[in-house]
Image (tube, one colour):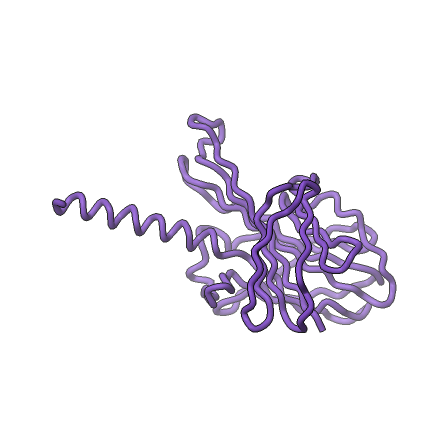
Length: 232
């Protein structure tokens, strides 16, 4: 093997590792699942791969991911963009809920991507219950890929552009680093084991390859949807 061949192989190997590491990272919204009307409710957001124990400093976030927009949807359906401020390895902020019911924090960010490359889309959700009411908005303007809680315990549905997504890959990291790898069924649903108390990191992902010469100029799009679930 000559020097040029060795250099090329090392280059492609490095590119492959880089792509795998990028795809494994995601945005995660951390916040308490319960709150009180009229009281400030805090949140923090990380760009991390919890399976690898990797939390990136903001300076190292992929492409323009640090420029995401964050929205809050109230139980009555009002959608408001929230401000946040940067720390070293996370961003933080807060909001004051004015209604009782279920709020949702949501992110849907497509990274800045060059022609011929894969577009990485980062979607993240967090639900916050305010007071004793269970009213939940009809979240019509959702991020492209989302996790929707089902009526039964541990059941979730993955939706792409408002429709159930079969055969979507779901990765879950639970307390004590116990992992689950699942796939959605024909209804886009999966059943997870949340029997242990602690924090679960749930991530659904899907990839669509574009044919050569696609109008977007891209090779494909990878999407993920994340949710941090706390079991008390």
